[in-house]
Length: 92
Image 1 (tube, rainbow, N blue to C red):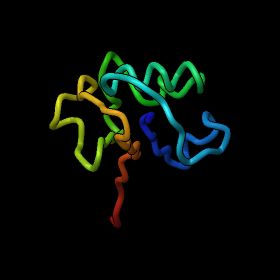
Image 2: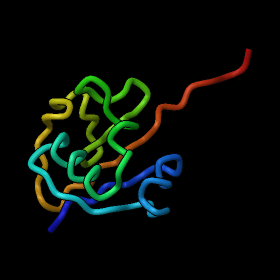
Image 3: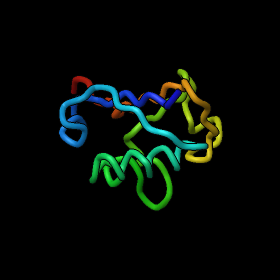
């Protein structure tokens, strides 16, 4: 059973409009590399200098990977990876 990756609207141009795609990998870094193989250009939007970009949040089964090992967070078949752009703003 592969890993499901849920893709935010802003990155769906890389996945042909799909809001969820499947990939494989022993950890998040490998999953992103495999995602890049199938959807060229998406990795650059997610990773910079071997770290998740500052304004991107990645969750594995509802757990923020920043608190569980970052890109080395282990994955198992059937896991769900959610990519969310950080939202900021407010009123002046």
